[in-house]
Amino acid sequence: MSEPTAGSALAAARIRPLAQVYRHFGEVDAAETSSLYARVAVALSESDEALRAIEALPARKRHPTVILAALHDLALAGRAPALAAAYADADGEAAAGAAIDTLLRMTASVVAVAVRRQTKPNETGRCAVLYPAIAEAARRVGANAVGLIDVGCSAGLNLSVDRVGITYSNGQSLGDPLSPVQLSCSIVGDRPIPTLAMPEVLARVGLDLDPVDVTDADDARWLRACLWPDQAARVARLEAEMSLAATAPPLLLQGDPVELLADAFARVPADALPAVTTTWALSRFPLEGRLRFLHRLAEAAAGRTVAWVSAEGVGVAPAIPTLGDRRASGHSIVGLAVFDRSALHAEAIGRCWSHGRWLAWLADS
Image 1 (tube, rainbow, N blue to C red):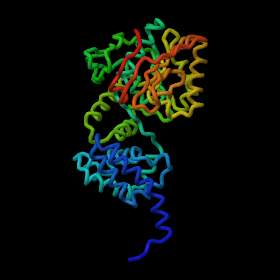
Image 2: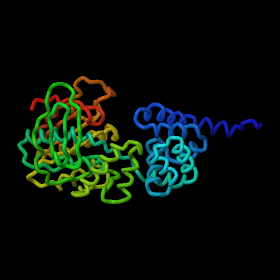
Image 3: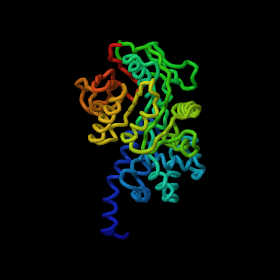
Image 4: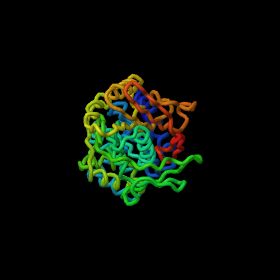
């Protein structure tokens, strides 16, 4: 039996941290929600060949969510039939073997997909937070119409917020009870949410470095690929959301969202309140970028009233109070900021958990 060479020992040491990332993802992150991905991730962590293939990607693209989405995209495209069959059967062992085989045989294709795409979380619970907050913003400024501007636009799905139906655990409901997209949200605490109807929406604009068009077949497949294949309920919700968005596609602007804000405001009619929304998007910006975002909102408000509704981690959204909560505390702050020329009124109007599946409303309405 040959002794390991210095080169092989160095290579093994180099991929060891990556193996730990994949094992942790499988045994912790995916364990309770996807037994399929849990098994695949652990299998990848145990394959030196697979880990070396993943090393071909830039460091920021090696995360399990990126690689698993790229593999899923190839399966959905019909280019990895064995993996597609294993996913369809929810067969973890078969999926583990097929994922490694696909990665090794099609490394260049996996790299190409992963480098070109950004993973797109499209949690439907966001609208359960956005709907009452946007309606409250319109009430406070007396607006009869709004123009929606979503930063980091989640494929524009947030921009259909006025067209979904939402049922809250306290018996309240908002939106369209006949919509094909029906959401549920658990209320925390005893304060009811405001039952205001969403004003008429006159514009829908999404801002993103890499926007995804649900009417484009490749883009729609990528959104499906970002979901975990054994989560049937989420897959069904996404299909309904994409179908709904496709009936009134938003305007998607590509580039630095902060620099695109002025263009977006120009797309909102003068008689509508520009309502900017950010949902777990600002954490991708450095602090300087977040402050620049706030400055751009203030600049736009020099000529008209502007509202900003945010659902961000504690301390992430500049100017939004943290309520004394600690950072990384497991929940997010729902913020409402109204810019009226030189005046800024910013308030924390709620807390939410699990990307909007749980909501505690705090504001006096």
